[in-house]
Length: 122
Image 1 (cartoon, rainbow, N blue to C red):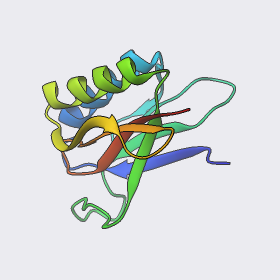
Image 2 (cartoon, helix red, strand yellow):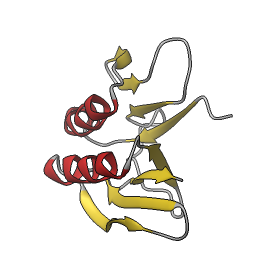
Image 3 (cartoon, rainbow, N blue to C red):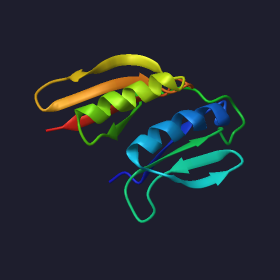
């Protein structure tokens, strides 16, 4: 259903380092890159994520209630993604653990404050 998600950034180089590390763990390469925009995803399908400086020239801000969920392969990968996020300028929003029957997730913010989680179901 979702093709891609775009998040705003005020420091593309810093945010790119954060998302390069996350994408490497997920096995997803950069698929598009311009002076003010970078996208990660797999050619030929699957959801992707992009970062951009806002086109209107204003500062990027965080959407209240907005969160991007990254599907992990297992609980160990949830932990690795959470650890990678914190090691690359992210901040904690909830350590990995069970969040109800059949749902395991860790929550974090990127360097610009956008909220993400890594999760596995089942």
